[in-house]
Length: 460
Image 1 (spheres, helix red, strand yellow):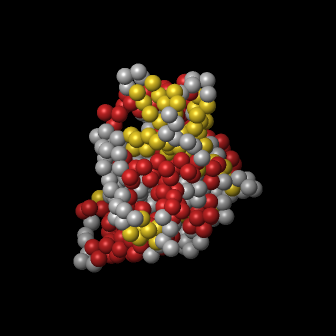
Image 2: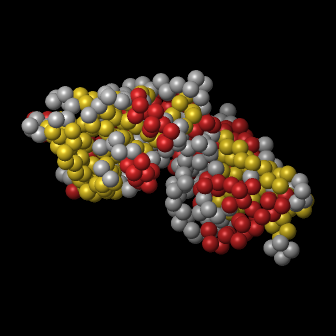
Image 3: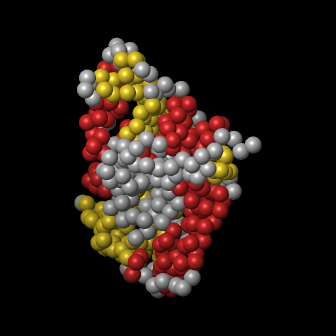
């Protein structure tokens, strides 16, 4: 007798709650219908369900996202970088306290004891109604530069997999990987390890409408933002997969209910209300946005990151500041609207020669970047904008760089406050190649600016 197992999966929703009512209805109705048809149904989320760009995720540190996932009662989830790095260690450690699902994560350890995080297990064995044993592994992208700053130790995927396979040896009939690693890594895994029946992917936001077969492994992925929902059908004989296929449902084409709009708006309204309750400062004048000219707002940002790092100079781009702030009381919602980016403050130490090189890179790219539509690397705005310095001057005629009013000495060491964003974008390679870069990963850029406003413009 042929056994049927259906896997329903989501990934990279990034707090796009506008799709959630349809996703929830689809998953719950599919589970009910398939179960009634005597098929075993498994549901998984493959990470980056949360994203602090949404005010409700910001206000609740992702707890609201977990509450929504609870509505599905997933069989398992793994984490993405938005869960893992968008929260500090304390927040991540308690993110899943109220979860009614298992977090499966086999390549991240607590640095303090080299053990799995308290919220995770490294594998899960699920028995179907026909007693087929489905082993589920979960892996997340191992950001070796940033996870240790939060107290976590990421493990290389190709070291973790052999260990995990040994752990589950003899305990399963079907092997599924929840992969928040990206398509190219999924393809490498399928090529190097014949053990996996299915790899459900994410992270690179790739869409595999009908799946992709690499050797004997079926790769599946459902794009981004909840625009698609994945569905994998497995047929088994004697507990072994004999046929597998993947497809997706297009969320936009799913039926809409009259109450959906109200529900969607309620998520944003609730988040904004929670953030508005947290007042941080009282400023005496408007701080306005101007993507091309220097403003008091960009100067506040420059001073804030200098003060936070102890550097005597700083650089920022105007495209970071999406809105201004009016004179009067400032709250966390205004700060979130202004600076929704997933970015952290960074102190860069360079030799004088490399500082000159960096500033020349900035000046070379200045006109190109002014209207450049930047995407990714933590940026949630539209254009890069103009670069502004504090403590640094550039003489375009003499091609000379000044630091705190003095010509830069090529043999001396200099510090600049900036953002980790500049480390990841390709326009200023000197930062990555020659900089001694110290990341302040315990707070986002907006929190550093908030702290500055609180200190210099207290409410009382």
